[in-house]
Length: 82
Image (cartoon, rainbow, N blue to C red; front, side, top):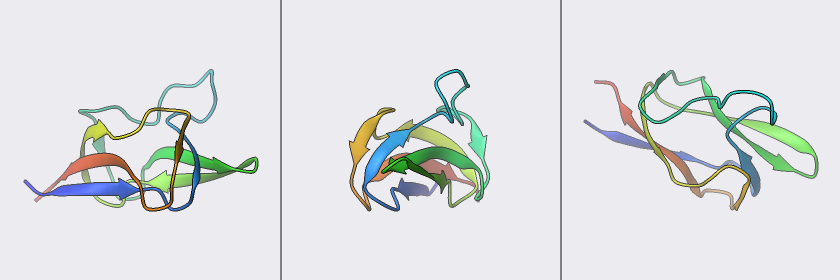
């Protein structure tokens, strides 16, 4: 199967959940659609959702939650359908 890398659209801090009391958007082994949010990138108190960008299954996250990321950095890897 092909793989798809989900990249950070901007530099900031990556979060895997919408807030500390909520569940993670997704976890490795779970299916996602192209528009499904896999996390958020925060910069200056503004939060930007990061869509999966492809339909498939989450293989792994390349960065941890609350980690500083650069624009274009790989956040997650998916195995894409078909």
